[in-house]
Image (cartoon, rainbow, N blue to C red; front, side, top):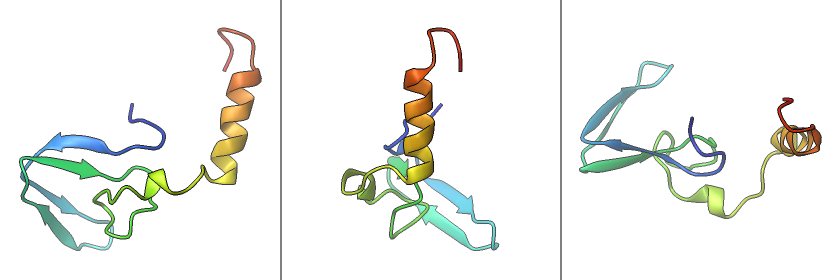
Length: 73
């Protein structure tokens, strides 16, 4: 499972087909893919996750998970 606020690192080079059919290529030995969808160069990570807080929905989910008794989700 990917980190909540960081990228997923994959061995490159990679070729990614986006939902709209656009194909993007990452030609580096290790490619950082954005999972927070805040990146200006999506699907690649530009470290935008470092400059922003979690979206409100994720803040609520995190608070609920932290408030749940151990073993409950």
